[in-house]
Image (cartoon, rainbow, N blue to C red):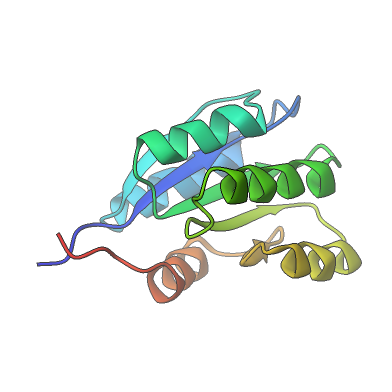
Length: 134
């Protein structure tokens, strides 16, 4: 029997707009995944700590503040420092195409831009996040 995919959905930084993160968290949960939503104003350190404590398979970041380059980079760095680089990082927000390419180079697996459907996000997570055997 395969265990369910565990995803931490987080809102890093000072951005207070969390409707999209909540919609994605609920959609992933309704699709049978275990979801931990961290709430607003989380630091990259708090997000990575939560992901490790929760034995997450993936972290989904929602960034609308314009600080996406700094926040995604720091999460990737912290995961590497904590020997947890196997946790898949994906996210969404209003992120320019040039920045998306750079984020992917840094190790972010996927960026979803406004208009992405919850079905496409669920499908991507199922196809790209390994489920542990449990």
